[in-house]
Length: 399
Image 1: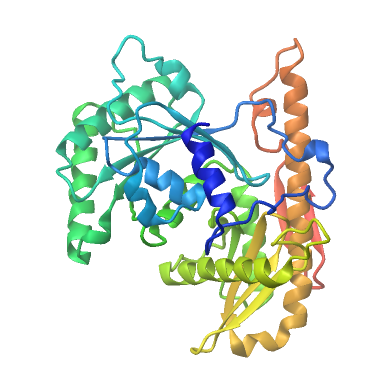
Image 2 (image 1 turned 180 degrees about the vertical axis):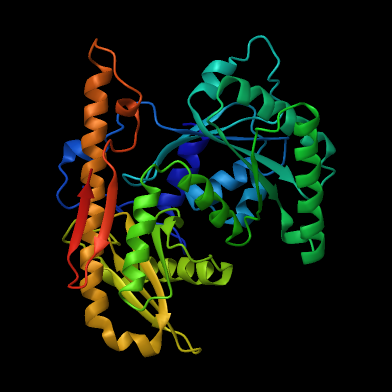
């Protein structure tokens, strides 16, 4: 049994707040068949590479975000001494592989296959320990991104300035500014101005690591503009202030509307998902049925003492819509619920378009005839525009 299996089985057997019991099963989305559950089965999924120096926190991030490990228990993790591959297939949108690299790896070693490692990479996450001297980490960052960019110019480069929970707010900002300046100056001096780095302040002891990983995953979802458009239309027609589309397993939000994300609001939504799952596990499961803790009956309404309402509805077995709105606007709950049904129907149509495009791509890949670039993309080959009309009907325009 490898380390990943060991940790996963341990957390399946011992239920804890915020985790899921082993009978938390995923079923096909309404309208999907078993055969279409994983259109990428057998195909190469996008890869996210976790890199950085030893003890920078790479494995801890992976365990906390995707394996529901308690942050305090990551203190007992041993250093990674080999590449750990983790397959993430929570839903039809959240499908990728995470490769956790040991910190001592040498990219200039002749035995290191750069083309294989970076060729199919969607995003490279480089973790820097903000509480340590980061000059060596910056040198490794520069060598890594320049090497990767030569192999694959489509890689998204993300820098996690990690372990910032032990720093003051002023120190956080100063550290981020210093790392941002030095990293970009190094690239400019090397003539690599075209390489763009995104920086995130992260810690496994709060929700910042989930928020940062949300941003990373969103860049790998070709349907993101469609999902954002649907959410914008939903909130504008329902008097909702903010809406998130969550992957309930990892608490990563795969899409939100165009208004800015407030960290406190995101944390409230994450806590709400934990509450819904915990209560469902205690009161919602029936032993005589193969039921899941999160199903089509899952919903929740929480009223805060500041006149704000949190409203959660199940979209499918792995996605939840969490909305934030004023209590004064909730007297239109009937309109909100009706528009939600329209929104869920539109999401289902996005799934169907995606699966059809993937099926066509797979068929083309297995044929001997050449295919065009558009046909081999993971994104649907038709443009998608979601709309919720004045009467609540959903239109998916295809061109």
